[in-house]
Length: 407
Picture 1 (cartoon, rainbow, N blue to C red):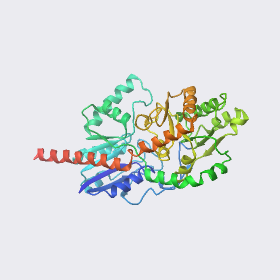
Picture 2 (cartoon, rainbow, N blue to C red):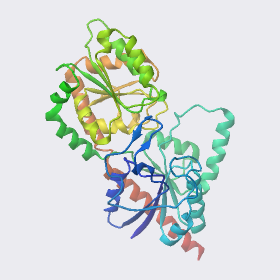
Picture 3 (cartoon, rainbow, N blue to C red):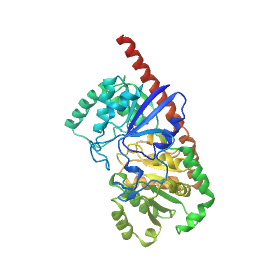
Picture 4 (cartoon, helix red, strand yellow):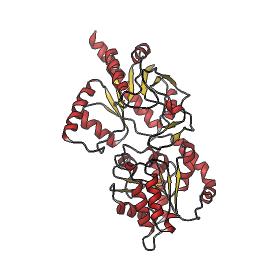
């Protein structure tokens, strides 16, 4: 039996299905250590700007421990919360491997130091990419020095996709062990919920005051500057007013700091266009599949987007997808002209052109959606489990080899 520990900041809606699946994996005994529990209650999400209480189970079906802490555990920061008893739990657990999500907290570094002391190999997983915010030469030099230290405390990395693999190779070297563990959502949950929603599609359309037969553009994420929500609004308005163009609806799900600016832009738009936009606010996980099913095309125009798991979700509805070239999942999930379009980030006219390419022909749009559904099957919880088990076994073998060499 391989004994593994997983250090995670707090219960996360995307992680729980994977953890329940791992708990059923033969030959694996996994314990999840959480440093905070605020996500189990209603809390103020800084990105959405509204109280959030998840409507799906975050616990249950897997072994977990909430670590005691010295400092405030109501928010997450470099030293918040500062957990205690990490050494005691890792020593008593006699773990073969420690898996850590992220390396930018003091708890992560304490756990890596403890693991090094106890001879437990560490695997890191993040969604970082090289398309992150630009940095000056000094900061880049400091980051390279940081990774030289990090490599000494880490056995290997778990890659969520192509751009993440490039990141690990860039900073940790071509010979550093990197294992594929693609970012995935619970495909069966989203696909089945979308299928269940399909018979009620027209009812939802009518409840939103949308005419039958007109295409629907969907955005669902936090309304933040880096999501470039305004680019989508401007591109939609440009496309909407082109001669002889289709008149698509624009639905935007989410809340955040950009909402007042979006509302002001729509108020200043021609009345006919403004009447065809809907700002629907925050919607919980179980509420999203009917909107995915309703849409014809989903758009994520973000910059500096590490991945974009919402793209995984909507692909399970079999929908065409348009993303900017700075959305991290793009090389893995979206191929221009195949299952959607890719446009240069911040280029409003290019986004308007992409909308026209996808929506001009309904048959093309539907075919793109079917290719999305086919592709997302390869980014599944089962693929995650296979990659993680390969990494666990390699790390455990390295631990065994070191012990034999020390005798």
